[in-house]
Image (cartoon, rainbow, N blue to C red; front, side, top):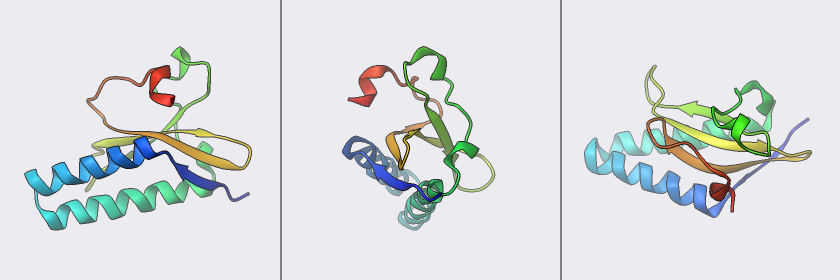
Length: 108
């Protein structure tokens, strides 16, 4: 089954903010590679999104949430927090691995 991918406005803004940080603190070219690669990784969730692990906050929330880790090179730096629905994957948040855990408020 192929799932549709839906990225919330909040998650999309977080992705752009993180790419902007990369551009300002690393390089514009690296930021573009990071952004394009992360978007491709998110798009890959259309096939078998359950391959991704449950998010560390999963036990604290009333919905099953998963996370996709991404980074340049071999070390992930960020994660996409998402929920698998019957026909789509909804990405609710893009976070640096060191950021605080998501709460129910991050889903609204």
